[in-house]
Length: 297
Image (cartoon, rainbow, N blue to C red; front, side, top):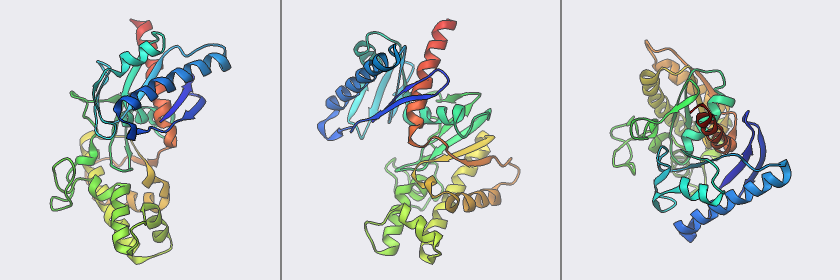
C-alpha cells in the first residue's frame, strides 16, 4: 500500500508505504487501510499545521466510484465493501473519493505527468496484466458500468493462450510483463528469469530474447492500434514494469505501431513520468476534485 499527502496543485508533500498483508484476509486488509489513512491524517496535522481536508483512495478490481463501493477485488478478497463510508467515519467525517487504481494513476499521468497538456490521452500500464485509462479533457472516462479502458482483454491472437477472463489470445496474455517473463523463462531455460532479464538480453543482442521481445511488441502494437482506431488519443502513455526497459521497448514499439496505422493519426507514444507514485497522486487529485465539486455545488 502506498499513501501520500498531496497539495492542491498535485505536489507530493509526504509519502509512506505499508505491506498489504492480504494473507491475513480481507477484513484485516480493510482495517490496515483505515489505520494507515488515520496515521496520515495525524501526520499532516502534526507536520503541516493542519489535517487533510479530503481523502482519496484507489483500489484494484471493480469499483463503483459514484456509490463509494469497492465491488470486487479477487486478490484482496472483498465484495461490496462500502470503503468510502468506512474511511469517512474513521477520518472524522472529511469528504472521501473512491477510484479505480489504474484510472486514478492515469488521472495523475494525464494532468501532472507525461500527458500534461494533452486533451485526449490513453494511459496503458504494462505489469502483471494490462489495463488502460482513457483521458478526456482532464478527466478519466469510466464507461457506463465502470469497465472502460480494459485494453488487456482485447483479443489480438484468437489462437493464443487462454486468459483468466475466459477468452483466448487477450493482449495481456502476450504482452504484459508477466507474459514476457513466462516466455523468456521458457526460452532460456531458467524458471527464475523475468521480463527485466529478457530486456537486458535483448540489449546485448541475444537472438532468442529478441524473438520473445518482438513477439510481445507485435501483440502490443496490434492492441494499441485497435485502441487508437477507437479513441484517437493525442498522447499514448506507456507505464508499468515493462516500460522500465526504456528505448529497448519504445523504439520497436513506435515502429510497430507506425507500420500498422493507415488512416489513423499517430499519437505521441511516451513513457509514464510518475512511476509508482501515480496512484497516490491521482488519489490526491480525486480528493481535491471532490472539494471543488462540493464548492461549486
